[in-house]
Length: 241
Image (cartoon, rainbow, N blue to C red):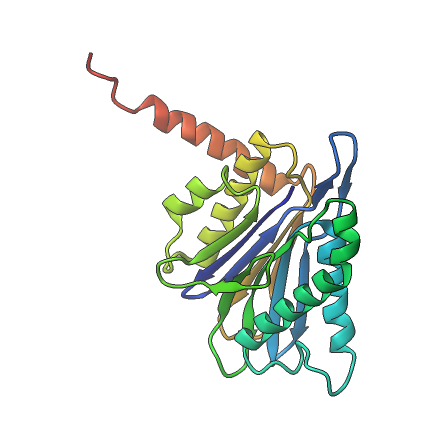
């Protein structure tokens, strides 16, 4: 399992992903699920992946391979983030078509989904959620964030805190708390956590952090959140029987 979050704000974008993969309770591993395509002053494209690791790695490798070929549609030549989403969708369907018959023989289906966001010079930042079939939706004023993977434990926190006017710093804290809460309740999500805060119109990644086991800030944040929640709970009025 995995947990990935992408948030669209008035001032920019937040991206975060964990690094745990597993194939059974005795087979855990770490793989980065955040891929960044950056050309300073021109574009920043961030891709968060969830699903079958072989499938997501194949899609990302195909995108990188196409980026290296001149004359072929690729992320470096995309004129809009919508075009970028279409390119990721095409790569997903190409991998699915290539592997489908072999996966079906083992009673396995293609399983890969992505959160795609960023900014290409000449248009505002945009955020997309791509499903296994290759279709996708775009974030809006009413739906400013997307999640993939083990979403249920972190969603209530984001729902209560995040609006489009939330600052990048507050949104980053909120996302980290959502990861802390998820990891407290589900062992299939684990560190390191990769985090990017992208400032609108900067066209480069200036704020990026990786939080590993024992990180002082992340540990303190989780501790203060737990203590604060308990204090608020203790002040709630008692039920009048």
